[in-house]
Amino acid sequence: MATLTQPRIARNEQRVSTGVRLHSIRVVRPPHETLQEDGLKWLTAAHVQAETKHRANTGEPPVETSFANTVAKLMRRYGCSPEKIHWRGHELSDHLHEDWQRMLVYRLAEHEKGATMSVRMAVFAQGAERAMKELYDGEMSAPDDLIHVTCTGYLSPSAAQLFTVARGWQQQTRVTHAYHMGCYASLPAIRIGSGLLSDTDHRVDIVHNELCTLHLDPSDHSPEQLVVQSLFADGHVRYSLAKEGNVAQPPSAVQTNDAAGFRILALAEEIVPDSADDMKWAVSEWGFRMALSRHVPAKIGSVLEQYLERLFAQAGASYAAEREDALFAIHPGGPKIIEQVSEALGLRPEQSTASRSVLYRYGNMSSATLPHVWKEILDTGAAAPGQLVVSLAFGPGLTVSGALFQME
Image: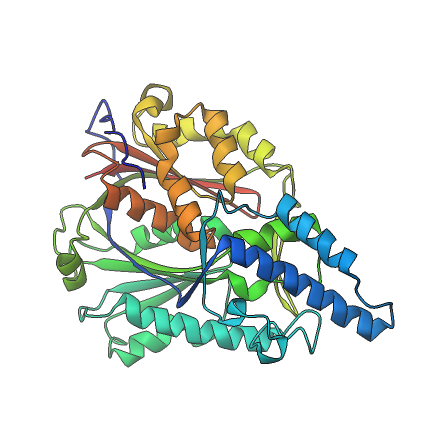
């Protein structure tokens, strides 16, 4: 990976603050990873198999070679290219082979859409519980609050509740669920967590479990779904919130040198008018289904600059004066989102390097993605002490959510 250029420091390091700091970001990868090139081939094969099953059920003529060639061409045209996404992680081993009889979820030899929601949720439960244990491996100190974030699986008791009991923390740790907000959910989770901080000794942990690859529908060959199916991936991450001035870190942070973090200066969330149909995330019998309008980038772009002016003003800062010196953690909803947001704001390429890097290495992991971008900024030393970091993410609503951080 190319070395980042030395960042510039924000003009004024003393800002109005929420009094909250974010630190100790830890990532756990899914058990399987696939090169995007191989992933596109698997998706093509899955669509062909789903169509084969559909035609067998309806008595239509068998699938011809021309259909497979057409799907492959459409996948190349609409799917996210290996130049933009190199790897994607996934909890399932289904994506590693094409023996449809042996699949756990994508049982396309039995049904053109694969397994039902109950099977997918069982896989989610297993994956979330595994990741929860790994995220806290080697750490025995209990958080006062644990916020569990996901938009790809719902079970009660949740993985967070089961883990808390397994650790014997049930009298020390309160569990709060923040579900189904989509890609921007890390920012409302921080807002919720900030409200739970009662004193300087209080610690709030936020954990994301996202298994997006459980929700593919290979029987839908529309361009919109080819984009979605080639973009999303699985990911798990946790991080902590504390009052400013609380220097105590959980043992894992000390051991892994993850104590560095950000001061949270401002948080803001707004819904774009007349946009309710432009992005949807709905539960269906065969998995969750995303609807994504081609108008999303334009509608976001039309309100973004004014939104950022209001966000900066909360911290007593000027967006116009500080934009040139800030880094931007843009949720990589896809390559075009990063490009079009950067173009709309007039950003230099190095101002959003971390977002492109995370998309290239991991794909879009829904709500877990933006915390990966924050970790990338910390791990690479991209932000100098005092530098501003602008976080932006978007979701159903159409919701624009953001935060203004300052590097400690």
